[in-house]
Image (cartoon, rainbow, N blue to C red; front, side, top):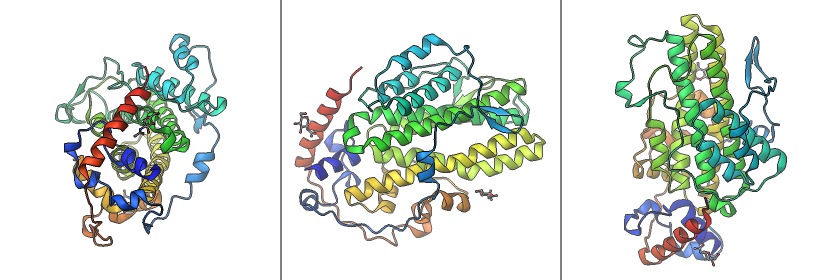
Length: 385
Ligand SMILES: *[C@@H]1O[C@H](CO)[C@@H](O)[C@H](O)[C@H]1NC(C)=O
Ligand SMILES: *[C@@H]1O[C@H](CO)[C@@H](O)[C@H](O)[C@H]1NC(C)=O
């Protein structure tokens, strides 16, 4: 029964109507789900060697970009105590995450993120269960527009380095919310997913909040601030699409969106060097480097879910991209992607489906439908707030 339940939670949209079931949502076979051993899946995967050290690393307090790189922020009494109290008074990780998501001010959001992760680490709080807000709170500026409406670097009032930094700040702030949303939204399934899952994504949120802080600091050194030009809202759309399925969330965010950062990072660094802004290029280089951990976490968690449910990761990943219309764009930086441990056959068309036997998917609608109905009932019961 546990295996069955696991498959349901991990792969079926828990709020979707059963008619929407497509083969990818189905069990690979119901008989193997109810009997003990799951089909063993051989996976060609070299995990990023830094993953374990990253998980075990102490709290990172280097929230300032000093003359020679990251350094700890000297805590002043300036951080807003009223906002802090909501996170400071919360009794679970999910509750703290929900408060971070509901905080509109970007600097406060970043600080609260760190407070939340620090409390989770130091006070051994439970994951808890909490309802995620539909969308994260955002400041009135930047104005969120469609990508077409974003001015090109030439038409922007910002110089190229500040322009690129502003874009990156926006990506990092979104990443804070995306990671907390994953923590909070799937918190009713903590027993199934395990505490480690939530520890990983809270840790990702903490890293991203530090990155946002560096970008924001550097923008102000250049005489600008986050909000000085419009930004787009496409990153959050991917998050919304995958709100009902944890495997789809992993595919959309760490494995596609964050992996895209691995491709783009080194180019951005080169452009900043070309522009002559070495300080910004160092910040961006460091951020790109640290993003490897986040992609590696996504790969590891995705594979673990696939293993536990007896699914071949490569075709499962591709099926999820299709089902959730998640676009995979190149050009790929193979060096960075290999380092993060994303198997090439997941994202390279030329290898599609060749290495894997297509699983015979059998859909047993009626039985699934009732399980999903129960599951969604339980998830709405568990989600408080
Ligand atoms: C790919 O990423 C690596 C860092 O992992 C970098 O050294 C290299 O220059 C990048 N290649 C391209 C083509 O951007
Ligand atoms: C829902 O919760 C009830 C009570 O906690 C439990 O007995 C039942 O098995 C749960 N259903 C599912 C599908 O998890």
